[in-house]
Length: 164
Image (cartoon, rainbow, N blue to C red; front, side, top):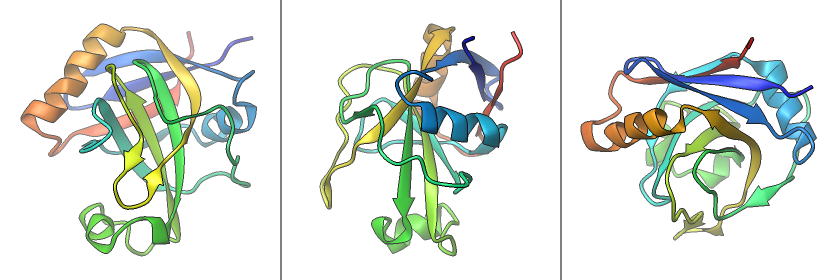
């Protein structure tokens, strides 16, 4: 039976529904499902193009490792990144108030085309595609683009189990 997440930009009051890709990324899906709900301040990517994300403390009992990886996410992809503390520069950690954590999970949503996960400092940054938005991508993408245009201050991104 398929499992679904509701994803919400709280301040903007816009939600979408994503189906978990249990067959393609079972370990990642289970880790995200078991840790739901998750929420945090939203940020818009600087280099990956059409991406919003939140960073949360590591939550998996055992990190899922790489599965169903991509460096070219498409609109509607939910992507899981696990970053060790050393992967993130000092200013970034201070800005996001995560400097004391040994590592973080980046829960990202890609809402438009032509994304490329290439970091100028470290190279390719593959992430696990673990879900796909199946309802309300259009309105959610408009709200994500508004995060880019208007800013993310005071906005939170929330992931929770969808009951149907």
